Amino acid sequence: MKTIQQILDWSEVWALLIPLTVFFITRPRARWVRPVICYIIIAFLLNLSADIIWKRKTLGITVWINENLTFLYDPKFKQVNNNIFYNIHSIIRVLLFTWFFKKLDPIYFSRLNKFVIPLFLLFVSINFIFFADIKHLLNSLLFSVEAFVLLLYCILYFIRTNNESKVSNPFSQPSFRVVSGLTFYNSINLPIFLFYDYLVVSNETYSEDVWTVHNVSYIIFNIFLAFSFKNK
Image (cartoon, rainbow, N blue to C red; front, side, top):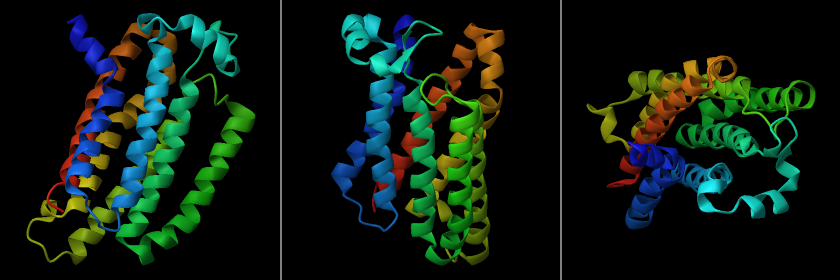
C-alpha cells in the first residue's frame, strides 16, 4: 500500500512521460501540437521541482534544499515550500491551452482570447499582489478560476464541433481527445480546487486523500494526451 502511494505521489512527474514518449515516437505535426508539447515539457520541469522539494527527506537532500533554496523558505512552516511551482503551473496551463484552442479555431478563439487572457492575467496580478503569496500557498482561487476558464473553452469547442463536424466519430480526431482529457481533468478537480483551502485547515489527512484523486485524474489526462499524438 505504501508503495502504491509513493507511485501516486510521483505521478505528477512520471505521468507526463507517457505523452512525451508517444510524441517522440509518432512526431505529430498538426498545428495544435506545439502548445500541448510545450505544456508537457514545462509541466514536467515544474512538477519535478515541486516533488523533489516535497520528497527531500526521502531523497536525503534536505540540507542541500534548505541551503540553496532559501528564497522559497516559508517562515510560517519553517521550511522550504514548493507551492510556487504549482501556482506557476496553473497559470502556464491556462496560457498554453488557450493558445491550443486558438490553433484549433484561429478566428473564433482568437476573439475570445483577446478578452479572456487579459482578464485572467489581471486577476492573477491582483490576486498575488494584494491577496495571496505566490510562493507559500497553493492558491485555491487561482486553480478554481483556471478550471472554470478551461472548462468554458472545452464546452465552446464541443458546441462548435457538434454544429460543424461532418465526422461520424469526433473522438477519431486527435484534437478532440485532447479536449476530452482536459474536460475530464477539470471537471473532476474543480470541486477539489474550490474547497481545498478549507480542507487543508479542517482536515489535513482528508485533503491529502483528495489530492490523490487529483493525481489519478492527472494520469488519465496524460493518457488522453498520449492518444491524441498516436496515429497522427
